[in-house]
Image (spheres, rainbow, N blue to C red):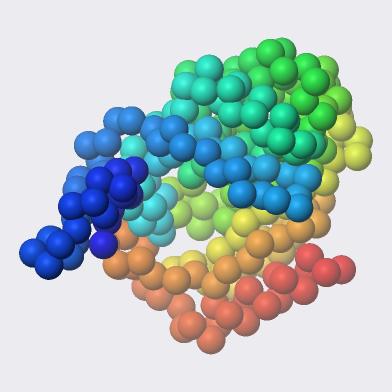
Length: 263
């Protein structure tokens, strides 16, 4: 078993493998300051390729274990991103989707790296994004949507809840009003924009009223493609120590929200 840091040197560990080798080699991912520079190219038969521009996360949402498994925020250098996109275009891919654990935390600037990509590779047919943090989308990004037609018009947000108290207890940095305003801003420059979102149902202490606020947000923000999950405890997280809802109720609420996305 190799940790996320050690897997970058998997060839070395395989070459050294013998009967006396350690069965588990897992270092402290928090000490890793480098970003993996390998690129996945195995998207044969597809028009879209996924490109990782960032790893790790500096935020501490109360339900999430990812920072402890993937380490702190680390960004792929711009020259390497440009090189990799050009290689993918040469291989015939028409759509490039930027991905990462928290791509909006790309340093020094997410909107800046998007602008650099569009300016340095004007022949890029379509640039897309993985999950976006509503709290981190700035006016510079909105301006790019207005200027560059090769930015895709579908946006997927990590929203998680439509209730402000639950969002606060989750450790999220946005409010339901922020989400509505963001969708309005994007639609002002992209009338054909489509929005998807991640939601967690049955978070600890979520009341029926709080869940109803989430359902209302779907309509108020005009969200159409939902990824819905019943809350699942992660040992060692603050949320796991909060009063829990029965799993049956979490699943019921998740089913209700999924039905909304079909309407």
